Length: 121
Image (cartoon, rainbow, N blue to C red; front, side, top):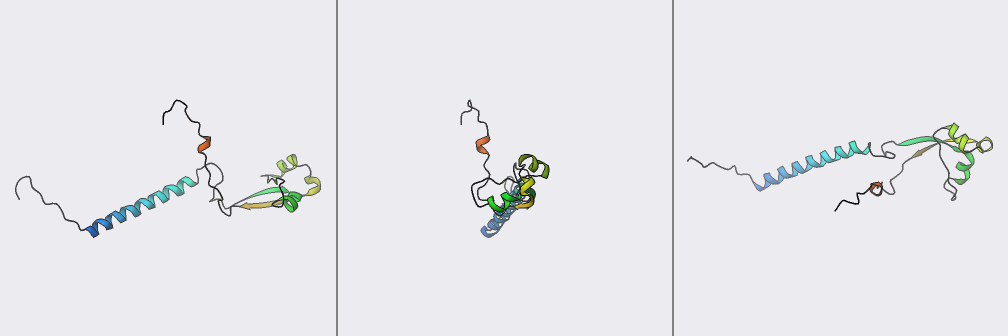
């Protein structure tokens, strides 16, 4: 070999494509892992929490939930329910379990971000 020259390793197109595919697959795996980690940190309910329990007015549960436009509230504890809905002395109280079946619309908190009016861009 003469001074200043060196051999460049030759790599086939197939090997190059395999390497690029492997890098892409590794990047996808990395992004999926980051997504899994972030999912639990987002504000609002987490899809990973399969269900939540709460308490309702029995009449709301029997007649209003899903049947009309009356709101049917679920409370996290019995005492709050009794305070907010004194009718439960007559109506009764039911314990319910609410679970996510599917996301109908994804969360979008971008409208809550305060924009700097002096920012150009």
